[in-house]
Amino acid sequence: ENSDFDPVQTVILANPLSSDLNAMRQSLIFGGLNSVIWNINRQCFDLKFYEFGNCYSRVKAQDAVPVVDDFNERTSLDLFITGKTAKESWNHKTNPTDFFRIKSATEMVLSRLGINISSLKNGESAKGYFAESITYTSNNKLVAETGRISKNYLARFDIGQDVFYSHIEWDHIMKMIRNNVISYNELPKYPSVRRDLAILIDKGTRFGQIREIAFKTEKNLLREVGLFDVYESDSLGTNKKSYAISFLLRDDLRTMTDKNIDKVMNNLIRAFETELEAKIR
Image (tube, rainbow, N blue to C red):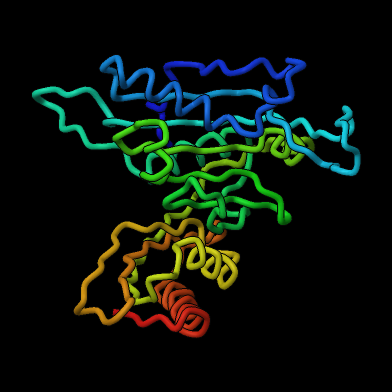
């Protein structure tokens, strides 16, 4: 979790109840980027914004004159991060905000709302303003999408630094968690075991695919799948990259043995080799 993700400004945009059709915004991104450049122009470069508001889309186009039923209203939660991760200090190193920070903030929001991140399918957004992105879907419906805004799109707002943006479909999430039941379990009595793999895969392969295959292959003992290193080099081969991945295993009924662990890892290796044509390094 990024517990230090504290929004510092609420972006206020056009009044959605305005009778002017142009005021019925289709996305919150435009007002958010306008707020970003407004602050940058006043020497505020490290920003964390959020906006919670309504968006509108046209659902019918048969009539020349629009009527109320021609439009769909939905609630959105959008996040914007740009600049450095913390204030400069002599005893603290600061780094530029990156893709993984907005991704972490998005997943934190979803987790706090009671959504199991591993149950969502990952993909890539088709929105033209993203340079790199990841989507989260459930039952083929968008839950959230997040990523880095392209430099060409930022140039329209005269923004010269990277901006990371996340859009969360609030109404859909409220339907997903409507029947959620909160339950508690006692802490595990038996220890977890971690195993690491370095696998060689095609550059187009996403970590989400690896995680999905892992949980599909081992449904009982696998608790977490993490990516802790990415390596790319011409020495690996054309269009190849290496992922270093961690697997956390735990049996809640007994202490795991080397035999159990080896069986799980061998099954995972075979699944990666079969479905991704991966090679173990």
